[in-house]
Amino acid sequence: MHLDVRDLRNFYYRSALGRAAQRAVRDQVVHLWPEAKKQSVVGVGFAVPLLRPYLPEARRVIGLMPGPQGVMPWPAGQKNRSVLCEETQWPLQTGMADKLIVMHGLETTDNVDDFLQECYRVLGPGGRAMFIVPNRTGMWARSDTTPFGYGRPYSAGQLEALLRSHGLTPERHSGALYFPPSHKRFWLRTGNMWEQTGRKISKVLSGGVLMLEVSKQIPAPRRPGLTEAVRRPLKILEGVRAPEATPV
Image (tube, rainbow, N blue to C red; front, side):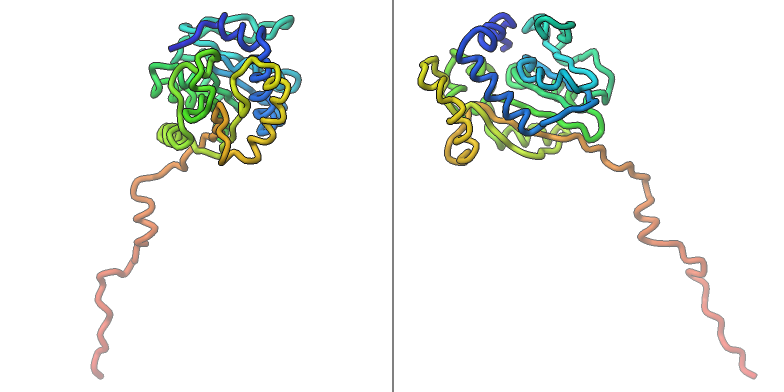
């Protein structure tokens, strides 16, 4: 189930809770990926709130938004970098992305396998992807007042197993949104404190979203029979009888 792009825009850019959520998730992404100099950065789903820090130095920054969700111009006041596309067919060359950020994409798609195959396709060899999904044990997945209350929530183990099964190698886990999804001023004012505390005791306190960084590793090519040939090298004289001494 995809949310409408207007609802996502209103939450992240026009509500105090959405701006706090945007800041918390974006700060953690930047902490994990502090730079993207001369790299291609692609956001999928509704990831544009997380892409702005990479605009000054990246070679290119693109926000892909699926058709069922809709698209909006981004970034405001600059040349548009957002693209409306098919959910599982992206207008990108194979292997062009150095960094891929997926938010409000994996949990809402009805075609998980095709979606992840497209993620794998556009990543370059050694490229990194960051998947940000609702935490099934967190408070945000239980509230339908935020975008993280929709779609399919995951546990850390489920998310890791799913991505590994599609050829993506898990590298490190993280989380965000440790404060409750409340519009009350107290929680909004103390949000940064809860984020810092949550990351320190993440095994005790569940964040609202899971963040899993994965890499694309290309297996070394194999030539049929080569391993066996090396293991059993050819012996030129194999099978030839040793010469017998001739009596004098």
